[in-house]
Structures are given as structure tokens and as C-alpha cells.
Image (spheres, rainbow, N blue to C red):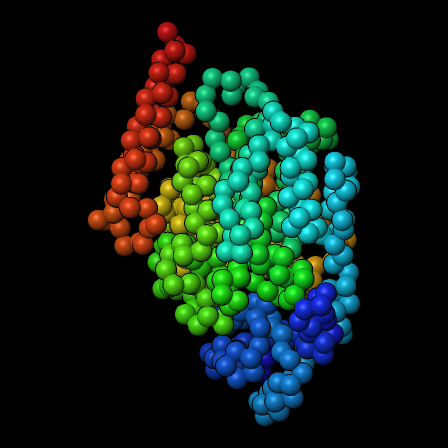
Length: 468
């Protein structure tokens, strides 16, 4: 026997699709037969997964229309399925997700007490760049399918003494690849704000870490999906190609279409026709490749579930430097639990969510560029609100995640720079030896290797200059 939690949903998003009298259901399959039932629900009842089925004893959440609800009840009655309600009206939760307007040139009017529209996020970033031209650089990295801008923010704070004569390590933080995950852009924009104002913080750890790295942020990788989720369909996930959309986190060129990706265009995890077929994923990959020198961290923020997921999502094995990255992730999880009483589970995608997936951005960055520490972080919560996370949880989530991130970062050691770069140069995958489908061609790999050799030479010159 397994239990399913029902939430009657009466929802509408502006003038678009409504979810009036829909139900949000929560289930926990206890054996393979029950797991098959959950996997078949898309075909049988046209459900929309909030958390898709994984393995036995992993939570499943989904919405179902009132037209299919009765049929589901009849079918589950025959199998003795029990229900309990944890939220009576999901529309009331959506209504709490207020979107606040930002007033141009008034930086303080952009806060984390509410969500923000794409236009306001971009306007705030432009104002931030204008107010702090030495520290904030707004980079236009591409256009979306519907021709919206995709921006990255480069944050380079004043160098501290130990960083003056060397390249600082880089960190890329990706947010907003799925439209309906509003908490993701909120967390990324908060990080930009907090790091920029680190000197005014009460956290000595933040003051120390902020200038140690060159930071790159992409707050909204999927601008079309984000706008659509705020104006037409609150639960829209993909980009907007052809009206059906592509899941950008299944569109990267690593084992494309092999694990956990769907070929049905109507499915929320439709991977597209080919790797990097979407301008949004291609723009993100270009940003990572162009900044691959000394790129030590790549973090991708999603919702929800409270997981710290380490590569590789397509495998059940613990590969490459999994153990060293897990130590850092465990430190982050421990800090979040001890200080904020928020529990995060650490592991591979199979360990945490219970299924395999390919074409994931973090996996591609790890394997193709050989970034040292890579993680996908699934933000709060664990299913009480899901995508309807209320506004009063935005700021606490942002503050906790930033604090936890400080525990995850491994402070750079100048003496280890040369060894690290030489090791990474030797570890560049050869095309003929790789079973993975990379976006890079052989010319790109050769250019990458040549650039790395030049960089190592520069490091050697610097190291000699220190001791001569």
C-alpha cells in the first residue's frame, strides 16, 4: 500500500492558463508495481509532474485536471490507495507569490521580499553595472528562441594582497534554466547583491571569500520560459521553441537523449533534436568554454527538493573526483542543517532523486571542460509548497544558501596553482577515447589545449619571479 497526498488547486496565472480545481498529488511508491503506476500516469491521466517518479520510496508529486481526477480516484480505489490533504488550495499559495515592481535607479527597491519580472531583473542589473562600473560587468551572451537577451554578470571585486600577482579562480553560477523555478533567479540575484556588498557584511567569511574569485552569474538562462510562467502558465518549465519547448537541462552535449530525456515534444523533459539545438544552452556552453581557464566551480541552481547533486547524473557510479567534491558538499549540507535547520541530501542524481538523466549542464561542464568542483543544487522546499514557495521564504533561502556556499568553496592556494593547471591540462579528454558526445570538435579541443599551455607558461614565469 502507498499513500498519496492531495492538494486541490484553484489557480490562475494572469490571463493565461488556469489551474482551477486541479489537484496536486503526492505519492510514495513502495514497490516496482506501484512505481510503474506512477510512471504511466502521464499517458493515463495527462498529469504534470512536479517531482517525477524515480525509484521506490522516492516522493512523486504531480498535478491532475478535475476532468481526470475522478477516473484516477476510481482506479486507485480498486488498489486501496489512501489520500491525505496537506494544502487545500494551491491557488492561494500562487497568489502569495507576489511580483514586485522595481523602480529604475533606485537599487534599494529591488529586494528579496517578493519575486521580480524578467524586465525588472535586467533593469536592476543594468543599474547595478552603472553604479559599480569597476566591479560589475554586464555581459550579453546570447539571445533566446523568442529573441530575448540572455545576460551574464561578471563580478570582480577589489583584489586582496595574495591575489595581486596571479589569475584568480573563476566561479560560474547558473540560474533560471527552468521557467517555473522562480526561487532560482532570486537566489542568484541575491548572491550578486551580497557579494558586491561584502565589505558591509557582518560575515568575516564572506569578506574573505568574495574577492578571492572572479564570479560569473547567469540569473535567467531561460528568459522565455520565465516570462511565460509569469504571464501564461505558472507551471511552464521548458523554453518556448515552437510552442512546445525544450528542456534546456537535457539539451547539453553529453550522452544526449540517452538517459531520462524524452523524445515526445509534449513531455516536460523533451531534449530537443540534437545537442545544443537551443540558443539558450549554446550560450551557456559558450560562456563556460570562453572562461575555462582557472574555472574551478560551476553551480547550477534549480528547485525543488533540497539536494546537492554531484556528477554524473547519467551514472550510478562515483566517478572522477567525486569524493573530494562530496567532502565540500557535505560541509555545506552540515552548515545548512546546523545553522538553519534545513536538511540537504548529497549524492548523485540517482542517489537523491532516484533516476538517471543525460544532457545535463553540470555534467557537460564537468566532463568537457574538466571543472574541478561541479554541483546542481535543488533549492527548497521538500514538497510542502514546491514551485509555490511563498515570498516570506525567499530571503531566508537566499541567506542560507549563500552561507552554505561559503562552506562549499575551497579557498585557492597560490602554491597549488601550477600543479592544478598541469593536472587539468593532462586530463583533457581525447575525442577518440571518449564515449561522450561533446559539443566541442577536435579543433576546439586543440585550441583549448594550446591556450592552457600558454597559461601554464605564464604561471611558471610568475612562480620563478617570486623566488628570483
